[in-house]
Length: 484
Image (cartoon, rainbow, N blue to C red; front, side, top):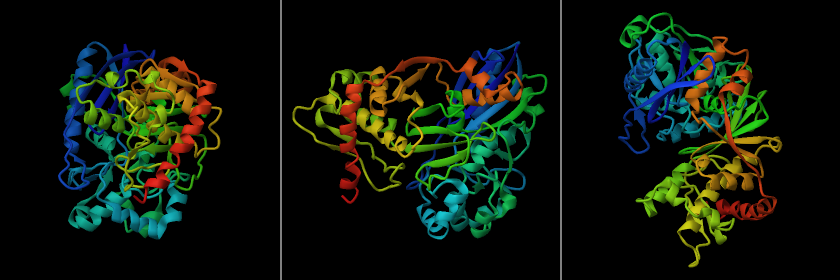
C-alpha cells in the first residue's frame, strides 16, 4: 500500500502524519526542539535541530509502516521565520523566529517610507513578525552575516534543502515575507530595490503542489526507504491548517484558537483590506486567504490557569462555565496580555478585567476569559462584509469544550462545526501531496473524503441578542484603557 507523509514544522514541535490513497490516517508522531530566548524580545531556533527532529519523526513513521510504500513527503511550517544560508548552504546564524520582536525600529522605518505602497503590493502592514524587518535588522546589526548570505529561506524550506539540495520556497511562504507581490506571484523589485535587498538572495518560488525534488539517497539509507520519494513544499502553516480543516472555498471559514487565535477566510481573488487584515497567497493554486489575529487567545486561558489555578486541568478550569449567565454576570475580560494585533496593531496595550464584583466566583472569571477571547476574534470577523452566510470550522483549544463551542455559536451568530480528526497543518500538507500525486481529482474530492465533521453548534437567538449588547460594551474597553 502507498502512503504520503505530511510534516508540520511548528515553533516548538514537528509533527508528522501518514495517510494512504483512501485518505485514512495510518500513523503519526511528533518531536520537540529547543527555543533560545537570550535577549529582550529575542526568539531563535537552530535549523539543524529541526532537521534532526524531522528525521526522528520520519524514522518512527516509516518503521511503523514497514512494508508500506512511501511515495512523497510534503512540508508545512511556521511562517515568517528567517534562515540565512552561505555559499556552501550552511546555516550562518540561528533562525530568527516569527515571534521575535527586536525589529520594531525596522518596522517603523518601512512604514514611514513605504507604508501605503507596501500594503498595495503585499496586502499587509510591516509588523515585527514578518521576514522583511528581520532581514533589515540583520543588515543593520550583523552586516557581516548578511554579506555572507547566498540565500535566505523560511523554516520548512530548510528541510526541503536538506532533503533535496534545492533552495526554494512556495508562494504561501513567499507571500508571508512582505517582499512578494501577491497578484504577480513574484518577488517585488520595487520593495527589494528600495530597501537595498539583493534579489539574488531570494529563493526560487514554486507552487505548493509542484515537486521540488526527490529525497536524497543518504536519507533514504538512514530510513531504509527504497524507491523514489517526491518532496513537495506544501506551504505556510496557516493555509495548510485551513486546508486540513476543509477550508477550500468561500462557504466555510476557520476559527483556530491556539496560543494565538486566527479567524481565516478563503479568497478566490486578491483583496486589499488596507492592512486591517493579513492577506496571503494560498496553498491551493490561484487562490488567496485573509485572516485576523488575536495575539493571546489560548495564551490568555493558560495565563489565567497558571496564575490562579495551577493545580487544575483546563477541563477543571472550565467546569461550570455553562451555568454562568452570558456576559459573566457583568464581568468583562480583554485578552491583550501581550498587546493586540487585529484590529488595533498595538504592542503596548495590556489586558484587563472590568466590572469585578464581590458576587463573582472563579467560574465567572473563567467564562469571562473565554468570552473575551471569543470577542477578540469577533473583532477580526467584523472587519469583513462578506462573511455572514458562512459556516465556521472551529479548531484548537476552543474546540475542546462543548460549552465554549456553544459560546462561539452565540457570539458569532453562526453555525460552528468541530472536527473528528483535528490534525491541522500536517494533514493539510499530506493532502497537498495526495492531490499532487493524482490520488484525488481535486482538493474538493480529497477534503470530502479526508476531513470529517464531528458536531455542529447552532446559535440561540435569545443569547445572540444578549451577546450583541455585551460585545458592544467589550468594544469600548480598548478606547478606555489604551492611554492608561
